[in-house]
Figure (cartoon, rainbow, N blue to C red):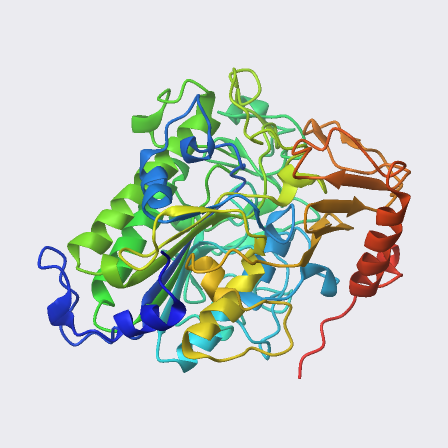
Length: 517
């Protein structure tokens, strides 16, 4: 029988002496406040893990979390693209409420209002130390950035005590790490300059100097060349600060390991935002060819290894029994996302979408339904949950640990669902993809009629722009192959009424502003 929430909280108050001898809790550690770690992958699909029935790839370390924790089958990112999902994860707010919550360039201003409640802000008030390590992609500064001076506001101004990030994505400039608002390893005698509108005089690009490329661009990635890889945007200088692409995963892992080692005496929240398997896919040479599916598959194997090493560190430091781990991805999968890297050619029988329709950028299920695992040794009983839950629910759910509420958010308090004590998840959820929104309620999904092309040719994904309403019973038709809108007109009217009440009747005219109180 599942532990009740009351018994769970009681367990947390047991003294360190009752922990198993082989993995003792740290003396002096406040066990009523578990460490919280969010491991967030980038463009990982619902079918990309062996624990989610993939047969052509083996991810033993992520599988260990699933086997020892709770695997969710109806969990969602809020959006089918990265920036909006990350915004919702940290703020608990639907991204469509903020008109700027879209895929951001590397020079975009900070998307999160510094007065807004965030997950790290809430946890700081509860006595936690907080850090983000990895991909940020939520904007920095005010839109006019001097990369050679302190950059603010950023992660440190929205609740993170420590931050070590890449500003946007690894296919966008600037290709440097930023530590607590300062470009790491920057030589002020070689200033860094970034521009997303025009190139700097004399600087090579993928168009002018293709002979310099070690990776070929397919679409949209033909500006500045860094480490032989063409990027989005133009950059000049800052050579001492430029990252090594093949060492990025190792670098973030080492930072994450060192963080938990140096913060084990107090409760901490770590947002470990891994960059894999986003493009450009540059796994370390020791993983090259290991998957048989090209760099994308190899990057997934590398990410799995990193997660295994990170969990080993938690165990070695005596932290595993007092750490809640939440694993997920920011959106669904994409194969060709700007480079020729054999992701399509070497896919074989692997299905990154796991039988779902669409993928990254799509309003169909594969755009937003993602792997989602909660692991807390000896606190969460192993199992599978089909409860509907969204990443933006983490904020209110964590607040429930101390019977507190968060206001002015869309986050739902589903702590018992996260811990496996309840399977009653969300009644409804608005899903979003590149400006389109849809409704999931129970077993039904309603997608309004949208104009525009349904197929995004450059990435090979069906995005859901169809000139008629769509209705799917997802329990009977997981792959959304049969639109039953004509068969169930009353259900269409019911779902549309709920959708418009939640989303507003002007849903096609743009998004609403977030109101902070």
